[in-house]
Structures are given as C-alpha cells and as structure tokens.
Length: 58
Image (cartoon, rainbow, N blue to C red; front, top):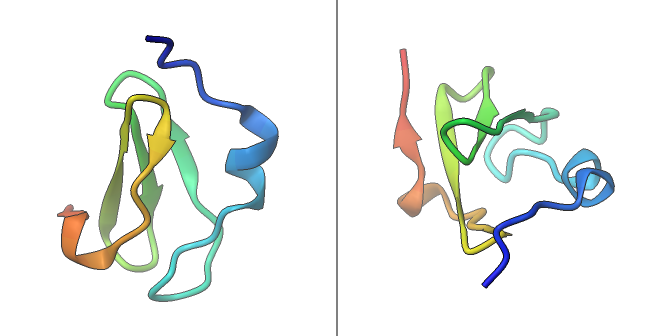
C-alpha cells in the first residue's frame, strides 16, 4: 500500500479548529497546525483531520 501524499491535496487542507493553513512534516507523517498546537496524523496516505485524533504539540 502506498503512503505517498498528494502535495496539492495537502495545500488545500486547513486546520478544522482554527481554519489556519497547515504545514506538512513528511518525516513524522503529520500535518502541523502551529496556531492550534496540534499535529494531525497521516495514516496510509490519508490525513486524519479530527481534533480528537490530533497530537498536542508545544
């Protein structure tokens, strides 16, 4: 199963909590919301854009 992520798709996504843009962390396979201090996981190439599934970051 491919875990490649479509960069154009990522550019269209925003944080569901703050509506801010996200940055992609390819090494961690996460989308980072600096404004919400959350990291949304990417599982099997699919971003999981649920606040309950996000990891809190400093």
